[in-house]
Length: 281
Image 1 (cartoon, helix red, strand yellow):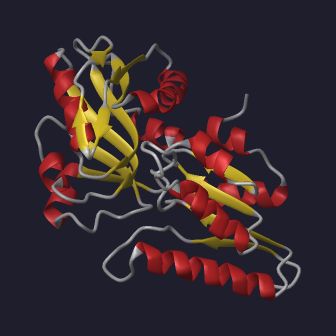
Image 2 (cartoon, rainbow, N blue to C red):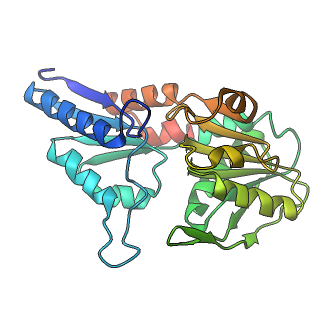
């Protein structure tokens, strides 16, 4: 390790073999060991960053776990952190003092859906107001790829004490193929609410796209609901909580390995992450 530029790849989600906290400890201790071995620079490549959804105080004295994760990683001597489709990019960037690189799935998903939509009119939907920017970036990418206009829309969403309310949908859905874009799918309830609202306003079909498929709780029921045509995720978190037949029939998985590999090359050689994500200007 001495004098080397070291990249440690480790996604922080719990599975059948290790809890998320086990993985955090393993990553921190490993980074510490690399530092003590004389590495010149250490970059933590964390495609799924644990505890990143709690990025602000919604009630007095709430923990802000995104900032605490930053403190832990920086305390071990991490020079840079690379993540994929973090929940709130602004909160992520503000939490860290070390260098950060945020990758996204817009090009991967746009290329995956290019042939699927055919010649039908397309609308990109954010299932909540907080994801509007993510949906807009995907819309711009998809317009370039298919060479025609793509609409946007968003859903109202309010969460209090774990209860989600709000069913207002802003946008024109009639006779369109709808792509609902989010950073992750947990129980699937948010995606299903959006699909229901879009179909009620005349959409032809609804596809759910998210970088991270956690599929906890009653997610299986939501994923199998006929109002969702197909759910597309990446291979960052494999859908191990779902039954194999459901994965085969309802889930499509897009690999992020080429994207991560190119991002590491860019960082090591001083290339452009923006050009990697958006393409040549």
